[in-house]
Length: 594
Image (cartoon, rainbow, N blue to C red; front, side):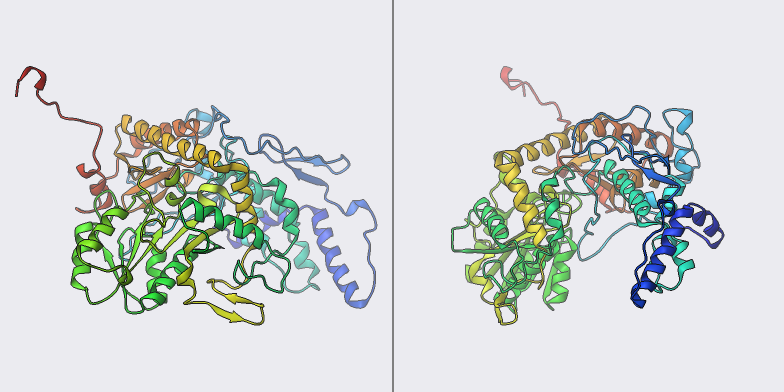
């Protein structure tokens, strides 16, 4: 989705400092010298750039003369409640989802057309937000954001020069060390990475639509990034490879086993690459326990569950959902009753992707009991990517634990806890894992996981987060998310827009804004005619007030979304099944008036 043309080559090349080209040529000479057994050293400091791009406290890139000593002023990091700047640009000037060409109102004339030329890279998505629909579940919101700057206010977009540094032309890797001219035409890696760092800061500062906690500080672990930490094999059985973090991984698994009330010696688990891998593992165990079983899950299930069914060649049924996103329990019961002769495999959603709906585990268990399905004939996997990490810390929430007849849980580590790399936790009953276990002499361990080599850094980062936060710290984060989500729901509702919030959820669902520039700016996740905001610890009331202010301006300029069809998500969003804040008046029974 890059828009750079051949005619812009000269512009992009002009941003490369002459000394950078010289340094690139030097790299080519060094490479040739090494091949010839020679030693080449730079002759003088003059081979360095004439000006050096450095950072500043306000996030803007500045330059310093070559003869001056460059200094790097690092911004403050990991602050959660910095107020937003008053003069932040508010929205876009080019509508992508409406027939009108009127620009969205800005706070002052100075910024009126700022987004008109907003760098293409900063948008980081296609020009038109696509509608994602699937009979096999809803899309997963995948994105990676750097934690730095998450609470620092809103960072300005990249300049054209900074954007050009991240173009395919500039970040390409030459394949011929002898091509000195090709190397000389490229900027140095430091300048590229500085622009990339600013891009990540920008995207992190306006991050609303995806469930990632950006408020974390792992600086104490940076020292360990120099090691190739690989937890290959089973986490509980050491291999011959000694550079691992198994002790930390086992501690993480033990924490979650206690959180979800599993007895010592009865659980097994491992740190995964993401929530999807946890679902793949949980469904694999189900298939191995019940090779002829049928997988039942709601239509609003994360797509990875139905991906697992395809991978494992399983029969699967996508059950309709209620308006708020929970599985249709009557439809589920009907489908199971039609197939009594086959084992039942159920994926229970502990928070759906788009609406944050939690399937009622107890009601599903009652259905199985009513239909006379014995314990040995059913298998329950719980997809708890975000909310399985939150529910244990919500007062009076329904219990999801292994005290009940469930078989596995998958949760993401980078969502509620916060982590710089995607990761997760898969936890299951130990007896089921025996069905997939294989001895691998090469490892001097056993193969029980989906992946072979596994990121030992992720286990270390999760352990560190859990130790630093503790149970009390996690609960504070959960309470913040729940209360702040209610604040956002109320603010949007007061503004006269359609908005819903499920119980036990921090996902606020609203009618889709009509301006794609606004959607991209705040990185909202959309499904047809609705969008959502996932309130995480880095989402503050300051940012919510700014978001709602711009949302109202967007509505006033571009109008409101109309349902795209009779049974669209927006129609379901307006259903009374969600409940609401308006209560019809009733008679005064205290005086006997009926």
